[in-house]
Amino acid sequence: MTRLPHEMDRRPVEAVVIGSQLAYGSVGNNAIGRLLSEAGHRCVMVPTTLLSNLPHYEGVSGGSIPDEWLSGILDDLLRLEVLDPVRVIAIGYLSSPGQAAIIARWLVRFREVNENALILVDPIMGDDDVGLYVAPEVAASFAEHLLPLANAITPNRFELGVIAGKVPEDLDEVCSQAEKLLSATTEWVVVTSAQDPREDNGIVLNVVLTDEATEVRGTEFEPSTAKGAGDLFVGHLLCGLFDDLEPLGLMAAVEASGAAVVAALSSATAHPELD
Image (cartoon, rainbow, N blue to C red):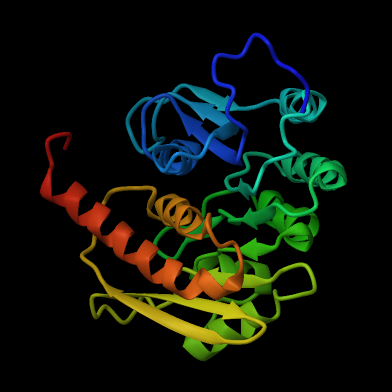
């Protein structure tokens, strides 16, 4: 690592989070970066889009980060030689198909200086209740450029179906589709909200697959209008795995992360001051 005499914070960078970022809000980088930082891990946040607030409100300003900016930011992090100690790279929302190719090329260069960091891809594309909320080209770019480089993949049920080309009919099909994502590079897959949305029994299911096991974890939950549950899950999952980034600790981390998300959603619903 180079000497950077102008930095007040001299701690090593442990995580790089690449995704959406808001001036006000609790999704994307805001959610994952906050959790990692609160757990004591220095986190670099790289935005793919920068907005004033969630687009669900009446007005929103900002937009997609230009490809030139994204490429330059990532290149500069390598040039500064601050990524050698990084243990996790988490990639989430993309706002244009070109961003996947930029990040993929950068990951190849990153691997030249860091062979051991966990690369997690959360292929944010849509959900059962709203369908696809990115351009089809963005969805395709995840599969083409980023999933082959991922050590871990965390799609929800709908996103898994987009990747597979068919929305899974039942839990068995969720497992069979997710199993096809495992490879020599991809060590584990967690499918969030894996339950059939037509079966409203108050239980959210997360399916965990490794080369050695397939397990289903269920947690009771109440519906909420709050956004960012998937990002919150990834943030808690990474915090839970930071001391043990091997699949051995994965099942317990998934269960704890699911419970933490349900608690956060319940808290948001119970405190409607901002409604």
